[in-house]
Image 1 (tube, rainbow, N blue to C red):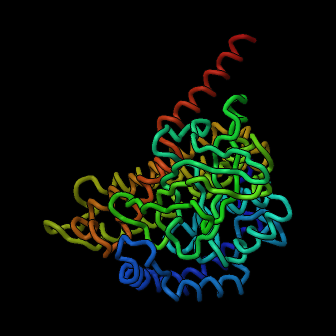
Image 2 (cartoon, rainbow, N blue to C red; image 1 turned 180 degrees about the vertical axis):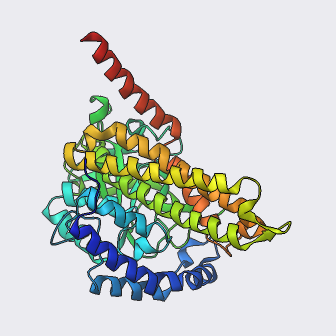
Length: 411
């Protein structure tokens, strides 16, 4: 295995780094204030995107720093999962950067679904506007009444009726539902409850302006509404879409979901590692500059030992994630389930640990938006649920280990 950066990765990374230092990092504090001023209301219908964001996106597009996640030479950067991973890490240092480069969730996952599984009309109608950054999208899978870490539990129904699919059900934690540019949702639902459990569900494309799509509320994540994106609860009440809106065909929902969750988890985990690197820098800056009891904080309370432990933890998480990316590129996401589960377990926990220790050094300043620490903590803790509970990942890893052990003992 070789995790050294390719020439393409080095080139994109240098350009990305320069763009972020010149354009994004100087704007982040102002963005935070503008975003709060424009979107301090929980009424998502009034949310706005600060105008400077669109300007930065256009500039990124002009500089060829656009759709870097997509492994297509024409539509994206044509990078492998392993090649893209360091770019995702660099973007993870900023809560704003992924959107600026059109590499933000859930759009990346939805674009990958349409790129790999969508037919020509679906790609023309929805993939192209998403790739251009003209619209945003939503992924509707999680439901309030079932354990949604098991995708086969989804109870929303998608029933054939003449030339239409009729959708009924309730979804929540649908990220991006409150964004003013959100126009399309990919909805996972039950099409055949009598089929084998991994072939009962399907995915359909549902325009958000379709009659019967009722967005009931945005859900605050750890007290924050994450405007202008939002995580919403939406009811589908006899929603009708044409039969050609189904992706692949009936029963393909679980397969698509598994394919969507492979590379996307690499993106999440590498962004988490980038966020951890930023938090560690704040830890060091605070530790060497802040004086208490006549000494820099770094010399007090075992903080140098903590610094060493955090450094090692971040580097271990990075190597584990790069290994998973290498596995996806070489054997495919479906055969790298154990490795993907491992990074989903490790990376958010490492980020949470680094942020927590850094907050201890910052004291009261860490509790408000004078630092990025509250936002980074929310990202870390949310990822440990959004990407599946830790217990689910541990169970997947243990199942794989036991299977391998039985295979060895039976030889």
